[in-house]
Length: 599
Image (cartoon, rainbow, N blue to C red; front, top):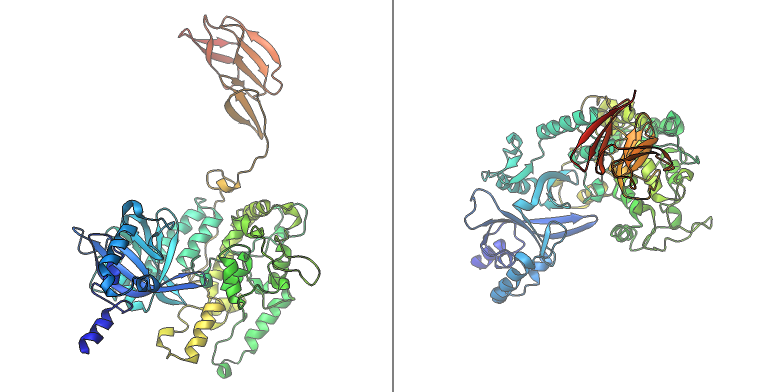
């Protein structure tokens, strides 16, 4: 009986094991499992329990694993009894080897539900919070995509990180490990020192114009533990515009923009007054909780699903939160202007939500491309595509383009540091948060409670539910004011290629050889054409009917102004002019070159 209990303890689903036959069934030939621990993959609202396995390949460095696997419980149970081991191993070797591998984006799916990462396929492994506890690793592949793996406790995660770093002694010394490079695994162990170093690096780049505002905000979200894999910690971005009614958007007017120095719940004077009164009137002794300005949060899983309800898998996640059905039509994301008024106005003080990254790059979430029946509102309006501001001209792509242009504008670039102070910085907590009317319920902050120390029962369940469903404040990255931007690179084709849209077009009638700008005008020239300064409105081209001659043309009308005779014995093959246009250099098919002057 003791032997049976011992076998059960190291069997599949145990906390740690040697070589379980069901694990071996999913490994590549020549691989050996060096550690397996219970873990789960979290994606949106889905949580898939299983085993996280670290393996080594024969002949590899014995200090570090060469591959990682995440094997769901269901996949292992489907193998059947142990008597089927040989058949199962043979079947799964075939499924997971070389050309038989089925890509799952990245990481790879080797068998139904089984994920594998080889060291050379992984860009980085990052330590992350889950439910505000140090329990998760996010694995990023080199070709895009990521997976969030959650462990049972912090010590288990620390042990996995230690193995990746080649430090099998354990994880309690991880806070003192400075290098991020662990052999062939690039690991961000999540220490404050590493976060600070990375933040200063990207902050300097942003200040000097080396990063767009969007890229910088996304970097801060990653550093603060946000992840698209965890809806309760979905990346948060600011509302930047306050004008959703004009026919044309004027980015030169300060009134076009939202006040970035205030949280959403304090933009309206009446909302700010109510929030400050709530803080002052709160009885901390009676409630057992510190005072706060806002009982709701600016970023929750429900908010992310509210915005993304038109796209799968978020439609299904949305229904899961609503007892299997869509929310009422009047509560759906219907209009940009209405959402702004609800979040920023004084009529609904419980709505303080900010935006998600899709508002700045993905128009598809604004279109009902899947023809979902979202119902009809009480005012008779059907809920379909999101109603856009007049300045978007009914085009979701135009809305996203202009919203992104606003994010990268001079005004926002000059004030974005103020919003960063509120969400990621020194105004997030303490006296500065109180003064800024920016204090939220205490359970939204990292370190407010250690869930692992709470006994199983109703209290622990209530705390976890609060953290999971009602908002998590990003990890604090700065304790002092964020410096303002010194250089704004926008617009720049190299740093903002997503802004490209056709503003004009011409047709020169034949192959275009050169395109030049003269002031704000652009002119296209046929092959072998030589523009004449200073305006480029006149050009010289080889004369097609007279060998050795060139024609002087009006660039736009192609009208011939003059013919330059006897430049070469053969055809004219190349031409250039001096900056003043007074000297012409030519090259001919006869191998000769000439310089021609005026006067």
